[in-house]
Image (tube, rainbow over all chains, first blue to last red; front, side, top):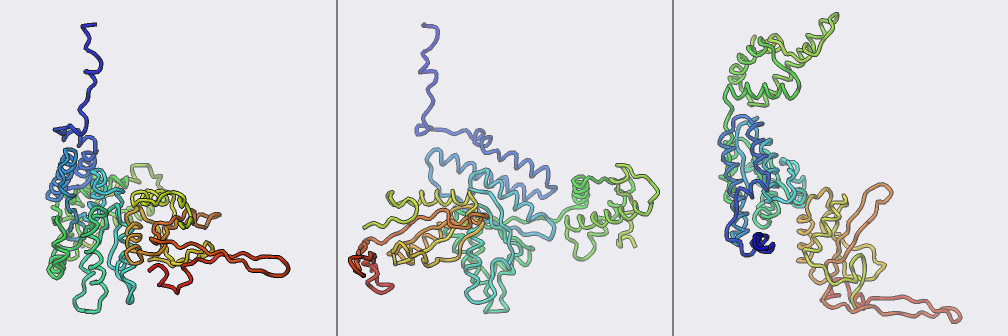
Length: 305
Length: 139
């Protein structure tokens, strides 16, 4: 009887109101945001500054949650973002992940991504724009609204353009319903700069400007390998050699679109591989032959001519 | 006289949180949300005015609440209801409809007796509110 302490004292837990400390690690484990961040690290190559920024945001939201548990009301932080970078640097992919991360951290309620461009927001006649923009905004609530190539919304050369109206409605909702949705505007760096300069209201409501750097040669090679793996292809040694020569050549070309150009090159290589296999009709094809992309499949590219 | 039309009308007025929860439920069923308003409370008045467009493919009730709030702001003294429409084959109809706003004073209905042949009586009701022209009914 004396040896065992009474049950009541053993099971007393601090009541939530009386809590004077929080365990950030427990919060982190609870949100499972680590998994998404690790996934981001693993699946997206390069993009160091972007990943660092996303970690910062995740930390901020976790701390905000901890503060809330201790009764510190700070008001939810504004999380509207702009993604700038050259074509094919992964803006849409990251936006997709962002929706997931914000959902895990409890900042957005549903965590879906609504990706739109000018056409989805701007109407074709007077009175068409407002309901159209509002409809998209309502669909995006509880999630993330991703506006690709946002600078097309603003057309200074046409003063009667309805884009301005869409921007105004957007601003209003971004300001008043910060808890209901996160807006991410994206586009190529220089054009976004002019866009923000001519729309200071928008720029000032966006707290986070993330710049997506171009990929280095080795990163593009990694990306190519990863794309092939996901499509269940692989490169033969000669194929790898050809790819390593191909990437710098392609990077020199105009309209180089980073990962997107690589994807297109691989798609064309698949086409040529199919053609090559078809030409050897007599042969029985094994798994290996169907999976391997040879040097000649890549070298037929116009880069090598 | 508090008019009782649609779901929940015998309950106390729904709070915004409760309205949100109901809209969430409707969205989870895949129903489309519409907001309508009228100043003619006759129970056979099915054709209320539409406020904004019907909302399809919403994920979160915040969007629909935005329209409810907008409608309340524009028409604070009339009846406003939220409809949830089920487009599934076989239903294709409103599955849920409830009032989210009503005038402060509801004057009720006048029961009219119309004598026709013999001792027969035809009954009809008319809202006292509709004696006044549209737009002046709930000033």
